Length: 156
Image (cartoon, rainbow, N blue to C red; front, side, top):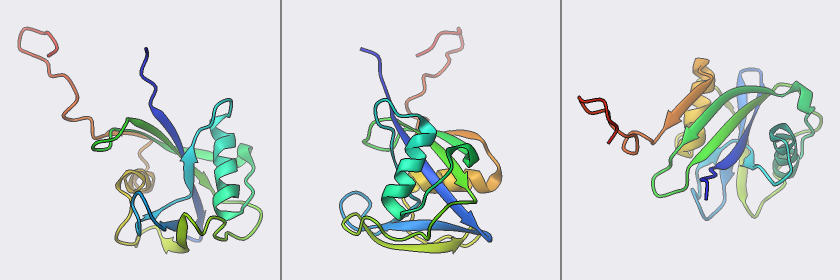
């Protein structure tokens, strides 16, 4: 059976040099900051997943044609399944961001891109850092999983 990594979308709502972040309420990464995000659902395009997640989590409507993919990250989080995350920048939306999921999110807030809060979830923090640096693609966490090339030219 072929391996299928989880596909995530991350939405960077950006205005006046700030990005909207949400603070996780409980469970995985409780208390840590993250941008609105979620998993791709069956039969859904990646841009429509971003539109859906933005509406579900913070109540804003996005135009899928105005989304700009600013980073892709293939990540192997410690002890988790591999993921491919697509980070989309949105600079225009309809509605004011509000906490639509208080059972999952304890707070939302705007943070300067050059002064992000401590305690961010590592995987999306890496994508946000890459966005700030203008890096379009990266891999993370695969260092120990990558085969090494032996002197005779075979992979281990």
